[in-house]
Image (cartoon, rainbow, N blue to C red; front, side, top):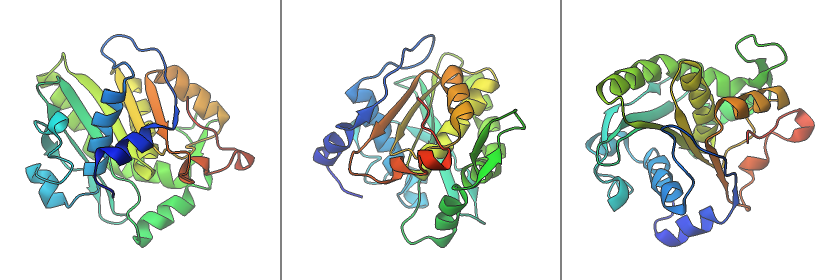
Length: 234
């Protein structure tokens, strides 16, 4: 990972999907996009540092007062994220880590995501098998924590974020949370195409407050391809 605001600014000069917001969802701004980018980057830091919130990205002033409370993890496929609250911003944050360079299990998840699988048995809706498998493994560790934090902080906004593979998982997580009755914003970075066109259209109707930030030089957002019947949300 590269350190410094120059790289952040470079990343934000990409394809940005800006959609209307309502209720307790966040509007688009470069400040908001930068803030959640830091959370996404923090997911790549050592778990022990994230737990103490003293990693290199945790020190960024805009997220320094975040308090992590849970760390969803599946050892079999090395899937990981963290959940917590930023009380000054009145936000509940759910973050998912992307592919770890050189990690075979993450690479297998990426490859499996080229294969379609049914999404919740909804007619015509399909998503990448690897993405769906990872989300379903993490789901039992995510939803109850969000429910508990929301009960304790009912006025707080819920934001789901992630980079690369983590961005794909953030899309599935955001959809699940809205299906369960929560208002959610999704800020994702370098997100691959998650599912087929019926799924993308369904997601757009479900989570309109989604902001997809793409570096034009990044190959991941171009995969899986449209010719493979995968489409971007938004």
